[in-house]
Length: 231
Ligand code: ADP
Ligand code: ADP
Image 1: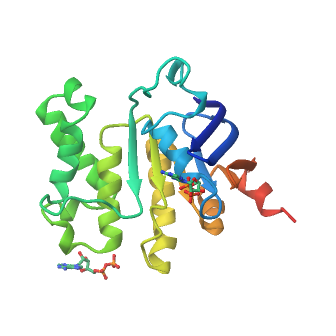
Image 2: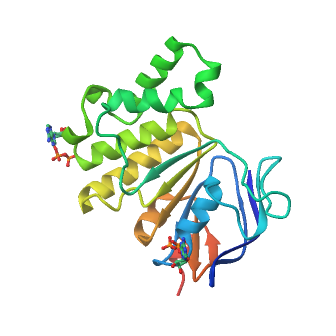
């Protein structure tokens, strides 16, 4: 379980988040929905541990990972991230991306080289990229590149997977089919996913719960069917 309590985040004069209280259950698929500037990325960056809140605490399970009253630095946490821009490395092929992610992670400390290689294969199969393992990013379509980014993020078995507008750079048809794929992957992994989007249809189609944000506040947090019936 992840718990955010009394979170406020200011950047100079701008208050990006006000009074955010939020609990996220293990295995939940939570979508954060709202217009540009409402604070979605700020919330994701706080969860990732890239910065501390100005006020408030963040807890991962029993562990307090952020508390600006006790420490100016957020604690490291075990997360995976997927970005809108894919952010692949041009000089690495598909399997090298996944291998690199495993090597630079605690997964490598508790597993043998053989186990790591089978994890590479397992994860590439999961995202449907096994047949492309020797390809470089330049020779992959947008959807395929995003599958590689997803494989890289999930390979080290993160506690949570943070996804920041992961489908926004893809064309409309592919976005719809990738929604289903990501849902299937979520079901297979049982991982906690926090998924930022400004696309209402996407949030409603994918998430267990949708957080609607407006000007730095959580306006509503409910199951998709409840959000959908809003006047
Ligand atoms: P969203 O992801 O929903 O578009 P953000 O979290 O990026 O929203 O931004 C929330 C608010 O905080 C906006 O008003 C934005 O201009 C401001 N903001 C975000 N990052 C910074 C920063 N590094 N410095 C100053 N203001 C920022
Ligand atoms: P998608 O069906 O995901 O939209 P594309 O239509 O872009 O993919 O590409 C179709 C096929 O062509 C894919 O299998 C992809 O791997 C391959 N492909 C795309 N771009 C290149 C490239 N620059 N070099 C080699 N193969 C490519």
